Length: 101
Ligand SMILES: [Zn+2]
Ligand SMILES: [Zn+2]
Image (cartoon, rainbow, N blue to C red; front, side):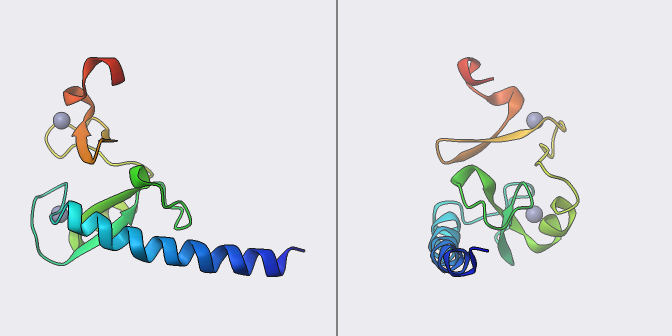
């Protein structure tokens, strides 16, 4: 059992989450699926709320968030290809720079 260690980890990770959540919504103040600026939330793309890497935190409006929670990835609303986090932007797989595709 590593109860103490786990509790400490969770406090640290909880603080990181709150800070990153604020930063994500500052940097991208709109839903990346439908572009609305209303009722924004930050979605954990892989469904793991302890994974707070930038590529796992996607700004979504409430309705898109509810839909996105059914899938462990984000699909492009235009073509259905995967969306990838790339240097602060969420890009459709078909729009990624060639060397990253
Ligand atoms: Zn949306
Ligand atoms: Zn697309």
